Length: 348
Ligand code: ISE
Image (cartoon, rainbow, N blue to C red):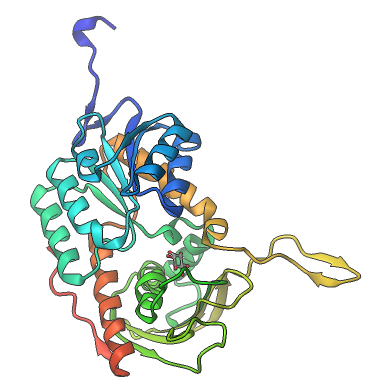
């Protein structure tokens, strides 16, 4: 090709015909995992920088991957040598970072929550809408899990008829320090909210959060477990047992009950061993292990979508807003003990 006709596409609007230069903001447990993924696994992406409020951690992670250490995440968002950012900082920083990224025309993959309230998430929805193009994807990784995709396809095929119930279990071995009762809803049940919307293709219209007896393994003051009941616009009832100090492992299961049959995902039936000790298999230790492949797929599809010019391939700002609205209603129900209705308002 002659020089005169050569073009290099590299704008957020048109896509990229070179590797996408990505910065990871927040390199705690999840951000480090994503930095490793981008540096070692995701095709078409180049990890170029990391940033964290903890300067020593920023320097250590930057050195591990041989990339720039940027001590101010807002500067990283506006850096001309960064095309896209992964936001893995604490939730309360997301609003500012995502709005700045939109202002700078940068692509974003934002870990959940999109922001910490429905009002601020709505602001992000409006800001992206005003730009007229999709720049923000929200990190609900379950949508990239093969079993979740299969269950969604089964529902969509209507082979089993109308969905009547989803029965879900969400169990963690332990919680990090300072995990509050509200965080069971905001941090854990938020995935069930998105999974429900994904699996059924319907909005959630009401939520009730009940307080069963507490496990003795929960830190003082933590309401663990909780029992959540959600209602969808189509009349499906969704119950979730969320129990985050089981002490032994990570379990996420969902059973669909429909008019003509039922289907279950998350049984974790990998290797089944028989020995003098009995028979059985292994339980995943945590969500990084259980959903590792889903995160890998999520990142590859996001990078492919950004490079192609599509921008987003997965949950977007509306999904982040809907999850924030249902979870805020869930926190109100946890506090009052009452059923709380959810009204998302009009979608722009
Ligand atoms: C954690 O923040 C996650 O996002 C995990 O997927 C979830 O299972 C866990 O309960 C949360 O604390």
